[in-house]
Length: 241
Image 1 (cartoon, rainbow, N blue to C red):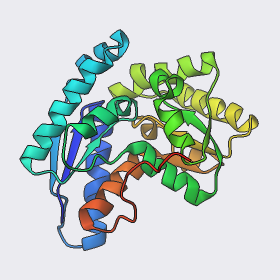
Image 2: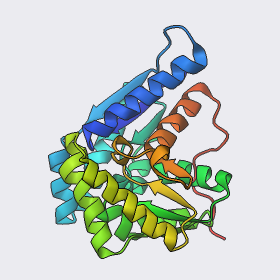
Image 3: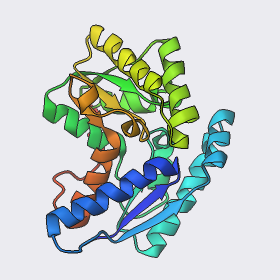
């Protein structure tokens, strides 16, 4: 079994989901007391958030590249960035290491294509919803993202940072997220991307009638596929048409 490297702590609440999903899936597939060889570097999220607010993406790229290099040195055969937003710097991080970076948007796109969806709602942080790095990557797979309006983007962002990253979510906030999803479905969304790794802490398929794409679970399961040699993709972005 190959070793997984995870850059976590963004936030640590969702990093716990990665650890649970990966190890439970390995045990499910291999039986007994099997668990995943996994190297984890957990960053101080306050430092990361400060860089995001300042727009210091170069500094954040350096921070995550250093973490990825340390994971590779420790023996990781692949690296995961355990957050959607920080895939804003995925390209420089991949360039800094000699092992594959499993990109969260790629594995999510694979699931969306498999489900037959072409137009999906994207919920995440403001950075993920408003900056082009995520939407454009999905577009390379023929997927169109429906992004909430300004007020709804602000509310999703608030729930993520003020509640979910602290391990909290009120019933009112959950209902608000469901209402935001309903508005995107009314605009033609055929499915919903939980494009923040904390969103599965409050939303699941039980809350949404349309296909729900849990990026945390999809990313973690892709890591298991890689570790066990059962992946059917090479995790590289398809060439532009």
